[in-house]
Length: 69
Image (cartoon, rainbow, N blue to C red; front, side):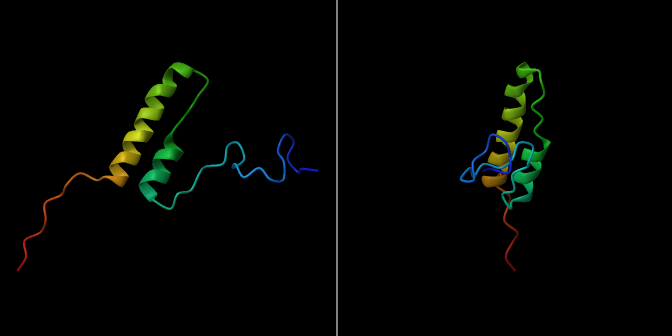
């Protein structure tokens, strides 16, 4: 018998409300900041903001290389 109603012992999904941890601070912060409230019309913007943060974390903008001495 499962300790959590509706979940089997083989269910590897995190419990509802648990924040995912990727190990990348910028991605973890973006996922933690994503708020999917009751108004589903705001979900697109929330997903877009999280997606943009993940893209920036994985593909940072080119930064100038410091001059070599």
